[in-house]
Length: 565
Image (cartoon, rainbow, N blue to C red; front, side, top):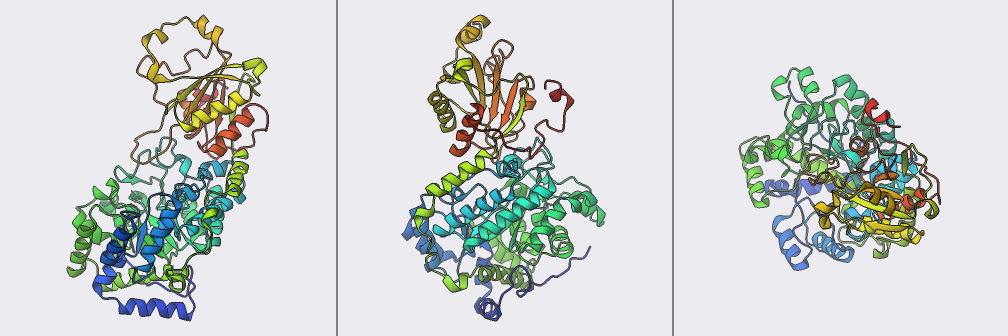
């Protein structure tokens, strides 16, 4: 299979640049030597928010983009300003803005998880997620969202997609992700649609090794392909390539020997499929290259230039920044990366910057006050969304609504976290404010005498047991299922036949699998303060459950879970 050479068209979607902007791109590109161009294709993690350190660092390296880990908003705003003021070319400043402004500023608004937003059934909430994320990011100096996630949560065992997705339905993902994009762009920033060719069919995490999109080509085209085509037609400026292979496509094209190659290193997936068949004219950024899905695919000295040669335009993060620059420099000198490919990559990067207006406002303040970050108005908006998202999966024995008259004494067992977790403390406090007596269990204090206590003592002490699961999805986990105590599973619902019992998941929506007999089960999808408020209100009948199932809580409609309904 020969790879097509598809040149960037700066006047076409997604750039749509006018004559002045095109001239800026071409003049800036022409003024760059090979070394400046090499530096432009890197997007490292900002090493600090210290102003003097950053000034020296950016002056030395002159990258094309940076990403900050969440930090206080005032620090970030000043740090971003220092970077822009000392960069020869305006920088893309990125954040993982999947859940709200908290993906950039640690004091930003935690609006909610994408799956939670999908559970509302209303794209207006996804638009509001994007709007808040974009506004708060812009206030602190960011202009690039590593969002929306457009993966499909097709495998309930997957430990990294889960609540980070808009669910398992293609049309829902399209509607929600387009709405997020529209909201985010109101503040002038650009999005990065991720993770091409699509996560969610494998049960493993690409942070730990290459994972596979296992769909046949025709089925992929009607799901992931349709999602990407829709976002491309809507003008998404950047796509993040994952360390995810798509064997069916490679085999279909006669490239069986490359079937396990991740998209980040695959010209067939990037140039034939994404650019050629789906028509993407924008900029492609790798997912983080320290991830083992990338690191285990080829020696890094080869992989760094190979990613650019394959069709990626920007390299995200480094193990050692200086070393990676040397690897890319050597790749250019040896012809692995042609001068034409390097020029095209930088042209696309500059095109995105011009599309975001960065060439007109480098070093200028966004004009959005810092007070917009984590504002009361945004918190209120998050509460409204959470109220529409909490989903009642089962209430077999009609335990709800909870009242102090019926269930005053509550046994509250945290799962996946401990008694000191903010989510658990807030939940217990809200129940206590409603007139309940809540005894939060601390597993660290459990001894074997707890194992041998009479069941009658549990019935005498408690009117209700609540199991609050906070198994948070995060990178580098191999699973996010409930893991009970080795001490005879003392924190499991072992007395559910004696004391009425219910469970709430503040994260992973698939926990019914590991407590199938539980009488009442609720999916809340997130552990935010707004979500905990909504759960407490709906458990106690102050508000109705409104959420719609964005995924199958029965893990593939399993009869051995439904049998307990």
